[in-house]
Length: 534
Image 1 (cartoon, rainbow, N blue to C red):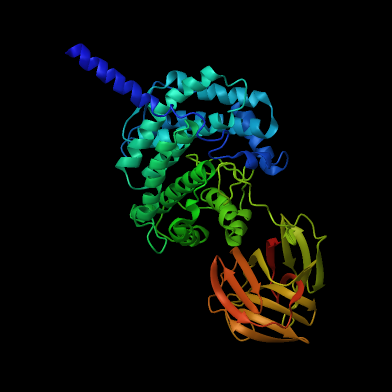
Image 2: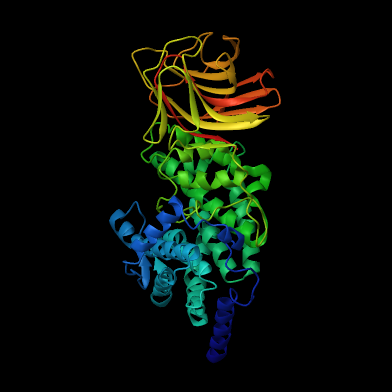
């Protein structure tokens, strides 16, 4: 009787293990987080590429910290042990991933070999995790090993025996961690489990498990995001709530990207684009973080990587402008969700081998490496300093004593995004302007942003024969020495102005349907950057 029971038990155990391996070639490889057309379109030069190669070169000098049992206690019970042990997989996972990306971009096999070294270190050594945060860390850091292995799919040095060994680790360790969080938690822990789960299901060609995880991912979107886009479960977590919102959205959107690329199902638009509602809700908290929180978002770190990727997906120019004003494109994150989106760009196109959404020709894409594309019309000194276009020694003339325009004429509808900032003085009336529809020094539109408000400032204005008329008022004011992301949209006769992603004014006028765009100020020093008109 005991022998029969043991035989049945072993048969069930073997069947359970093989469940992730019985379906051959259910998906294309390499795919998952990075699909083949995306890889083919990746740059082989430039800042983002150089940063990947530099980071991979550093990884070449590292040794693995793989351990048999990854014990990670609750962060709030034992931060030192948590951080020390989590760093083992976080460091090796990132190094494997960045080396795989470097190999993908450059074709240099030394990076592939180093990536394989980290992958196989964990496949050969690690057999389990433990501790309260063991599953979480295995998901948020271990998913990088799966991404790396996926990118090495066609590398001859990553042998069939290697892949079989690694798939055993994925099945016995990574999937176990993923399913623990998927089925036992309901916040960002679940999102990390879902990300690791869909990556594993894709890598192991298990379409049945993929379908199950997709169902759970839809449920997570429905549960975690309220109808107004807010994330009440994460916002209830005290002073680190803003971090946890990013933690959830980053892993959730990365899981959505994997599902899109693997199956063709586009959850970016699921339930009336509920994820975008969450990103819209969260964005103002990133650009102007509220008080009372200890971990604050930044355009130089998290969540700029998230909005960098999502600007590609949803085409929101305000997100792109904010990200471009920081120190992206590549910042190593705690937890792997969006890290290399400037080299391997996501897109909203669906399918197992989707074609990336083509980038439209830019009418203006001015990052101010020089003043060659700008023309001073009137006023003080316009010059490029520290990568920004700055006005100093301004003149004082009504309506605008200082004007500079881009040399390109814009015709028809457009969306203009840029960054603006005015230098503070003892006056309460410091201002900067964005100009559009410029015909000449006496005929143009401008939007005024000011610390104060009257009939001559803070609004959308039309200048005809040197006389300015306010088309509509902007009642919300600015603060000096503060960067603002500005968006101006002309659609037919409708002019819409947004600041920080929020609409501040709308007007109707069709006097000037073409013209140049640029900057101005009545009489204050100011600075601008990243003038973009697609």
